[in-house]
Image (cartoon, rainbow, N blue to C red):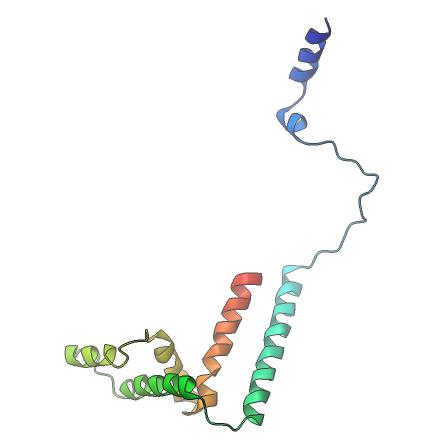
Length: 144
């Protein structure tokens, strides 16, 4: 008889009641406040801004020439910037030469640096402005 009672009891419960553990309210902490989306983005913006200010301060204080790797990347960015000064969009030879400017490094970063050179002038500090954009994208993609 007991088995039949257990089956009746079992069939009267919903599936979620069967699989969900019973909640005990004895040792639960008080409700914590959650941040709104606006507050989260504000915190990310402050973190990004502090990083940007720190970078710019470093570039103001550091007058050393770029090391060989940074100088190589700067030369590559300047080569693409120079090629984009007089583009010939419908000339196949121009495109061929454009893509051959960098034989070992994919040119996306070089090409993306060109607008910064155009608006802010050509310098090592200007070339690093693109990194601020990349850091904002990284922060938003991870925490946003």
